[in-house]
Image 1 (cartoon, one colour):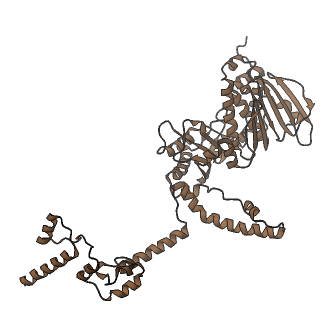
Image 2 (cartoon, helix red, strand yellow; image 1 turned 90 degrees about the vertical axis):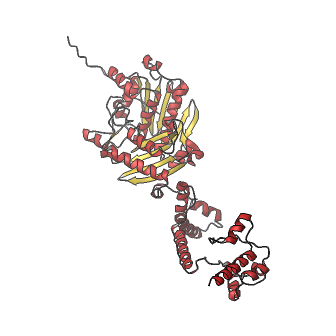
Image 3 (cartoon, helix red, strand yellow; image 1 turned 180 degrees about the vertical axis):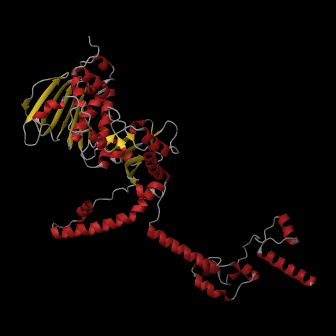
Length: 505
């Protein structure tokens, strides 16, 4: 009797489901990836009771032909690849052909689809048992409904979390889809209530719909290319961190991944700025040549392998550390905040509806806008990175020139421009100094004032001695008594010194 059994499809599909579909969020992930691969621009996601009762994904993609509906439920049936060589250049999110068959084997699943110019058809599966294809009403695209997940695998059902916990995990994955594909409009409902929505308006709009404007204000927006590897997205600033890693998202060639090399590079760049048990915030999109990365590592496609981990680590670490450290290279990596759109400026100043004048107005503002944006770019980036305002190139050039001129003048005027030495103060009324210019004061210095005449003009002034004369008995006596040196005492000291010198001669 043969001891080796060939398992039927019903059995090995359940085995595969244990790897591919372990929780409700896995169903959402696989179905949304199929919608994205189908070219959808609008995707709606419905979840009830944590995904245990219902998971529904509706898209406006290319749809499925009637002849392909049965094949969609067959294991290892896919439209993404055809040969083994295609695995070396995978350009789609899905390619294994296991997801639909695995989901159908552990749930009640219905696929309703319509292609452009064709009719709408529906096919239902109950635990892997297929029904008949029927014609129904529907829009162009695909509507996949998954009900009673794990109803025929009670052991797996018993390991699921609470409805709230499962909903939270699904919400996290939907958020990452919104961040990953900012060109697609997503709408996400939980128990009939709209939780998340994006409109396909770009990276910033997607970021705001998930994290809000407050978080955006704490992040740098970067776009860098190094050694053929492009790194773009948002990273938290030096003072912005989170208590766990759930706020970290990395997308490699449009696929969400969990990779130790990428994570270590980012963590290393932040090492000098974070306290213990604090984690950096980032949403990064990394684009690498497909031939240097292998995505066929695990059934869930979350992990990847790089041909050279050192290059990936070095590029990511270099870019992020340059931004955080305020390196001059960061000016090439950080994206300046978007200025006010030209159309909004024009809208405020329109005074008539003459198309020709409107075109001229738009052209004029566009020219000014581009010039001003270029002039303010360096200032804006330096304020973001270095924490303070900096000069533009032209401003810095002018300031350097003025500093050079000042140094040249300092050689000619050791006291600096506008400085009047004490011995050059003219014999004038002090009230005249209020309105007197330097040039006028210079003309009156023909007749220099000696200390006696200066003291008459300023009788209450006194001066500390700044040049020490060693072996001066008069100075040492005054130092002991603590008396301050006035101009009259200085005059007497000078007179006594002159007399002593004459006697010596």
